[in-house]
Image (tube, rainbow, N blue to C red):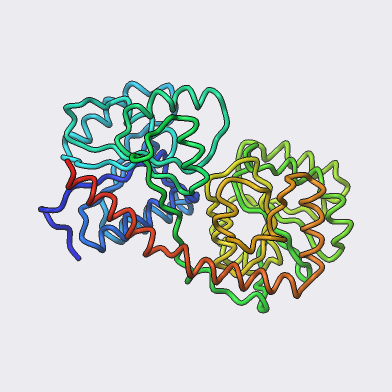
Length: 377
């Protein structure tokens, strides 16, 4: 469906367009809304990524969605970024801006005036406990007109922490296109960078403190000792890469711990694995957990925000509810060594992804919210 000039002009704004969970959500949402006839464009604060990390940019261009870029490379550029955003919103006659993630939430809030012709909907996707962030977000939250949280857990966290009024908060869970993840685990495709003939326990995510990979590597020696047929695979890049590699080197199991870095073939890697491990210290609704569910992959995760909502009432055996290394370790060993339990969890996970977390339902929920907010102006 072509964009109608009569349609309200929407902007979906984010810090950058590399292929992370929030970024994929934005790209899928923009494409879905455009298909439904919304006039939508995308704004990135940071410069656009170069190939091969520009998949989302290519996806948006294929759907003929305009992409604007403020060229911000550092927090020190707040003042020029604010000025550029102000000019962009005015020139493009934006009527509603949905911001994803902390930086765009705060930057857009700093422009808020009662006379602004646009509605600001912020997005909270993670229950980040840091104090400095709370202070800044509490200031920004007074200027948001509406907030979308990715899970009930995050909504409760945001309401307690930021004192957001209940009627200005909506919960829209992440949705996923399951098609790319429908790989047959029995086929176990060969993955470049991984040894043939081994089984894999995989963790996918940015290599920083939030994701808890130091915590996971602390228990890696015991885990790999008890799971002799399995190797540990860490997919992703980030600021802790070197310290995690050093930790791996001192574990005594270096040859069985594989750092694959950033990869474009996540569905294939999940398809070749036995188990997804999610050791995060905090989350909101972990996208990789949803990807594992769509891949019919069992998981073991810490009891973080959003995990129970994703896995549902039958989450026993997949969430280490005691949140201790020992509880996590025991559940990994049990699932890794019990094919029957893995198969049951895998089939349950996939069905739940299909029943509750489709891309269509996510796009519909955002579209309905925007229509309601715009008609109430």
